[in-house]
Length: 274
Image (tube, rainbow, N blue to C red):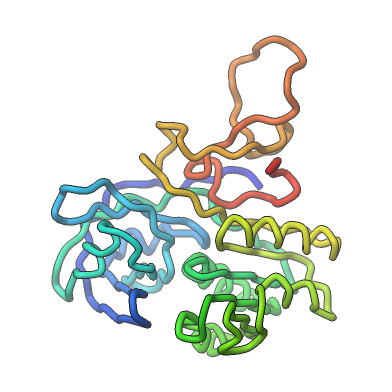
């Protein structure tokens, strides 16, 4: 897919709602009309913790409708803990939207695999696909039943939802990719977001099914805008997402390193050289 960038800028947004979906899992909603207007499915923001003492953190844009944008995240460290303590009426600076997002035009039957916090990246593409008349099946995995937040939301949006848990407390006892592999009706496209091991397994399953897959990679970002080259992955040199450098010597490797924050975070699975 081409690397299409929306005009990113710094948005000073106001918290309009806060929900603790489960212990350590928070949904923050913001009044952010301009950010909402330019966001595409699968993009992310860099959130600047309001105290100013910690670097920005990358978070997927979960919802973007009317004047409201939301972020769904797990509290895993000092930066997300500070963000989780924001309350209604407080302000935050968000840089975005960043990244390329999913390429979903023309898809008619789509399987979405989400693992853990990866669920935060896939609501917008699911909504866009359903509005376009596509069939959408969500395969959602988490460690426990309590961590399967927002599964009902996806069902209400029109997705067929299948769940898996590591401990067997709800749905399939095992990996979400096992659910995807067992599907009896092959989709025409797979979208996925989650831990790297899950994404690698999803790429393998999609290959076995003979279906193209787009993977939204989860990487820690330093700058989030492509300046530091600290979040690179190897991709085919011929990929439309491969960075273009001034001509050098002929020959050389058939892959180059692409920045997850700039050329990604979404890549075609068959073009990654993991």
